Image 1 (cartoon, rainbow, N blue to C red):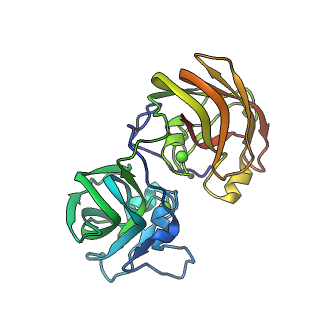
Image 2 (tube, helix red, strand yellow):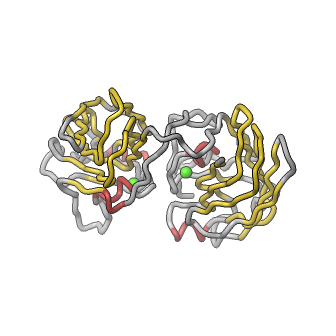
Image 3 (tube, rainbow, N blue to C red):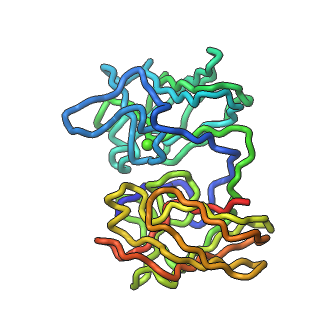
Length: 310
Ligand SMILES: [Ca+2]
Ligand SMILES: [Ca+2]
C-alpha cells in the first residue's frame, strides 16, 4: 500500500503537541530554482506545502544546490515559533538516501533578519524551534550546507509546516490503541499516530480478515477534555487513485469514557471533513467502524487524519 512512514516515532506514541499550524496552500510556495527532467515528475516548490511527504521540491542549480532557496509566503504577519521540516526526498526511504538533505539551513524572515539552524540527518520529521518567536509573513529557507545523497547531487525538501503562537484547536493525543494495525511495508508504517501529522499520505490502516467493519482505534488524551467535533480524512489520502483502491468508513460509533455513545456518518471522500457529535467531556474516545465502503483493490480500512476538536 502507498503511505509514508514516520519512522522515528515509537509505535503507538503520539507526536508531541505543537501549537497552531498555519494553514498553507501550494500557491504560497516559490523557489529560486526547480529541478526539471524528462521523467514528467513535478519537483516544484509547491510540493513543500501540499500536505504530503511523498511530493518533493528539488532545487535546479548546477551542483549540490548551495545558495538555492525555497520560500513560503503566507500573506499576513503571524508570530512563528517553529517549523516542522520533512528534509530530503521522502518519496521512498531509498530515494531519501539517494538525494541530498539540507544540513545548514538559513531562515530569512520578512524583515530581512535571519536565523541559521543545523538540521539532523535523519529520515524523520524535524521540529525546528526558533530562538525566539518571530513576527513574519514569510520564511525563505536557504540551502547553506548539505548531507550528500548516495546517488544524486540534488538537494530536496518534501514538506514544511509552520507553527505559530495561536493555541492548537486539535486536542492532543497522548497515546493510541487499535484493534489491529496493518504491518509496515516498503512504503512505510500504518500506525495510529500517522492520523495526527497533518499529512494526507500517512495513515492508520487496520489488518483484519474482513473489510474493517467492527475494527476500532482509540484516542487517549491523558486527561479529561471538552470535545464536540471530529475532523477526519477518510481512507488512503495519498492520491484520489489510492483513495478509491482501499476501504472508506461510512459509519462509526464514538464511545466516550464519559457520556453516551454517538454514531457519526462519514463521507466517502478524501477531502477533510468535520463532523459535529455534540458536547462531550472525555479522556478517551474509541472510534468503532460500523459500515465500510469497499475499495477497488485493497480490502483494508484506512484513516489518514483524525482529530478531536473542542
Ligand atoms: Ca510535499
Ligand atoms: Ca496522516
